[in-house]
Length: 70
Image (cartoon, rainbow, N blue to C red; front, side, top):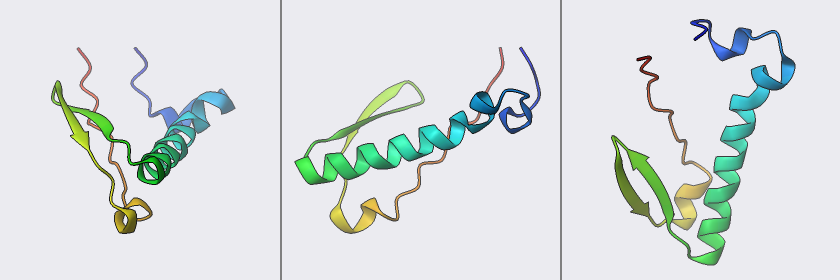
């Protein structure tokens, strides 16, 4: 496995993939709020069902879990 941060990848698609995933997650939260659908999040191997709140959707920032190389 390559120990370099993904932002330093030579491939532009790979470099920008993290930003694209963040945009997709934000859009998923917006759609979930509009449709009254829960969002499923896995934290430490445990599934959590979260109902996004209208006022918190635009401010909600999901931080990625730390990467543990095994």
